[in-house]
Length: 95
Length: 451
Ligand SMILES: Cc1cc2nc3c(=O)[nH]c(=O)nc-3n(C[C@H](O)[C@H](O)[C@H](O)COP(=O)(O)OP(=O)(O)OC[C@H]3O[C@@H](n4cnc5c(N)ncnc54)[C@H](O)[C@@H]3O)c2cc1C
Ligand code: FES
Image (tube, rainbow over all chains, first blue to last red; front, side):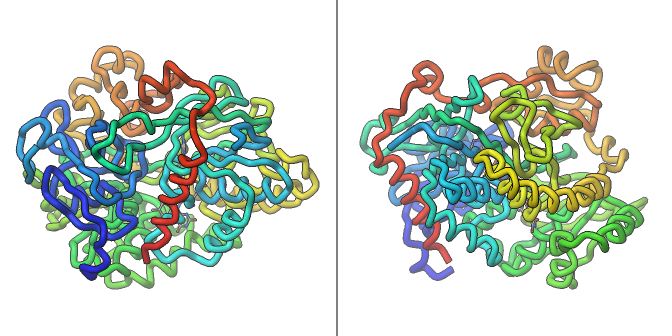
């Protein structure tokens, strides 16, 4: 994809990512190389179903927790946080 | 804006689009609610080459008077003519404004309800299946259509059903390196199915065409993944075919075992369920007066059948019985395909041996196989292990547990999806200005711009 096509900036765990219009937040989190959530026994998890059913892709978007990122399209300037950072077990960015 | 409709359609896949458009063209005031940001359901997702049929229906939808709520999830239906939906991921466009004020819960009323909620993939647990980058086959496809770059990535596709070929072909067309497609069904079972299909007018999910696109890729029958390997994410998958086992390094595993219908909403309304599917008559009336069901909840039969069913339900619900009858005759001819497909995708009993003692079955609550197999019923297991009690409410582990242990999930209760407290306590006439609808449609516009 050309850089020009990646016209939507957002942050994932504090790191800026640029995505093409129409990209889901789940895809943006994967692009940033992060897991979406940490399971109750501490495993990193990523999206499974891609269609709003499994809840594995849930992240915090602009402070609103438990959002299913596979069904939400990125808009400019949003801030996405994953469990990895919120629970302090790694991730790429700062909280 | 009126929040009361002649006909309300839940689900904007092919079945729901066909239903909404047909009903609106017949002069009805129609609402269409779907939890995705844009119409199309599972198959007509943007980001892939869409067939002419998809464009035609989309154009008819755009030209119609249908009131569309994209990004709204139906979580309750206290009576057949009252549907409660919550807006999905709504937050102010500007991150510094107060959250929550924009969240909406809508109460939608109607005279007739058409449920076109589609299906989801069936997932079977195996060691490592919870690693990031192990997804459903359709799940991986959806992620790619949602912007996940796949060119040059090594991919394994596995599970069962025609979906595997469709996904492999799509990803290969996007320059993914699809290493292998593993189909659990045996070659003889598939052969029987293929022969049966010669009498079927519609091409088997364009299977043959897909196979051509990926002819460099081995297609192994009677074969499945027995483990996903990796530390923090997928690095390789161990595959098995007969007595043979081997590892394939890969970036993504797309693994789904055919589809299970989304019947929670019809079930909640009290619609009769038979063999896991919503029972209807030829006019697609369910056992609950005024409630119709179209598309995959009545049987998995592919996009053309979903389109037919959407139209039949809409015509019947708007009183055009003669036209509905003539389409119902076309539908009847396709029902053999539904049964044949179900048989072809029947799971090999050996797949029950996939999970090891410490393999997670319920991903929401991290309940492992060892704490489940001694329970007698789903209810028992739920109460004592919290299996199926997490946010997905058993949508993922329920189908697996049914296959692994023979359990049947109990009755559903509202909310069908976790809903925000405000939606639960203050269901009211929507305090939605027209702008929230515009916002929903703007999302859709945004989505359309992507090549
Ligand atoms: C990746 C993929 C590829 C496929 N390829 C093919 C193919 O090539 N050919 C073919 O014939 N079939 C294919 N299929 C099968 C395909 O699912 C069906 O053919 C078709 O999508 C069925 O249409 P439908 O309208 O019945 O259901 P769906 O397309 O599943 O639509 C149902 C819609 O309802 C929504 N919904 C469900 N519950 C709620 C709720 N409570 N509130 C709000 N909205 C809700 C869902 O999110 C979805 O948008 C494919 C499936 C997948 C997943
Ligand atoms: S990936 Fe399953 S809900 Fe988003």
